[in-house]
Picture 1 (cartoon, rainbow, N blue to C red):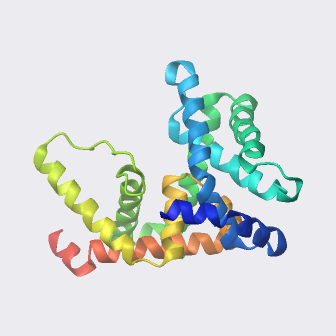
Picture 2: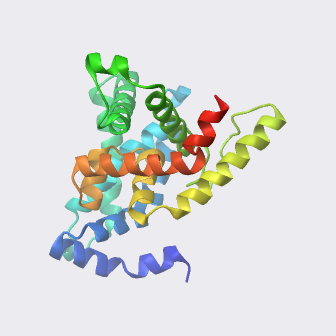
Length: 248
């Protein structure tokens, strides 16, 4: 059996663990198991909306929120199939979010929230206000590199089966980009499992730190800390400080 089939065979035990102990590992495993189903609903909603007024990634974020809610509310003892139970909640999470606000404002507000969390995580422990004016060039450089790595995680397709579009038209730039992506993939594999999962949930599935915290059983502040530490590790491995500053 492949990994997905193994996970599916464990589903009854996962529900038992979640309902008995509220086990974060069981919740995350169930989320992984049914994420393709949520993605399918998001893709259908995307194709059904005329005019392409909302991006697929935005709909996937809402679908993931609905999936998390369905996991926490589902009672397997009632004998219903989970996906039948979850379909209405995932679709409802998408439609309700769109109907309560204008489509543009709703999606942009969600994106701004994620970016604020990301910036807050990268800036944790740094000077703010007037003291920020004295921030060293190295601090600003590290922040810029952290944001660039986040962009790469979102845009390279490292966690996707789909082929991501290339960001460059020049063939030499494309080769350099692909080499950097390969290095990033190798360094990701060396991160701890928890750090890798947090990066995947945040950058690929679009979950906020609060959603990730509820999913894996940590505080929001701890998720932010682990996010910051993971990007700092990638930054140091991909762009060693001494080597980088010799170039500028």
